Length: 241
Image (cartoon, rainbow, N blue to C red; front, side, top):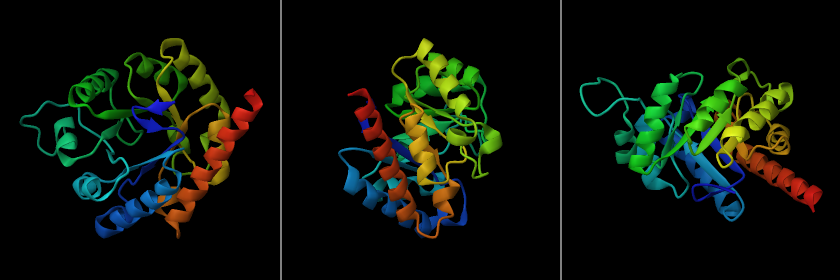
């Protein structure tokens, strides 16, 4: 299974705007993610989502996919401070996240962005806070959906373990309307065990932020999570054999 041409399992690192997210520090974490990717390039994908100010630098410096953290649902024109999808494209990024709990959008705005992403040949990862929202988003046919209850974001309590029913119910509802969209687990992912649990619940990867951006050793944290997801993938393959 792939997200576009991206191999799963997938680890998406949302840099947000921590101190480590800006300037050379952002590039250092991007390069750490790339080093891990190069060891697993045939079996996993790592995506980094830096702040808008760092999109061009990371896009030009890294081999791994770079996403924007957000795009505004506006056409080119008089929208001061906006980040339209065309600007994301121009930066060299391959896609963007939409509807994160910290940047919520209406369903019609998400629809606008999905359509625009198709026109611009960008990937779009849409976040959803609950199963019914995930199902509604799936009808719009984005490339991927991340299931992430907002009350768990940044808490260190992973949805894959604290609220596994949100993940499993979301998968069941999404698959009624969209058989192909890639489903990721987000919110509170803080350890390799959380990453493994996300795959065992039936999703294809994770959306993670503070566990990596605040880590004393981001490269080791990324590596541990990728290895855990691959371990879970092998478990599932063995159980199905």
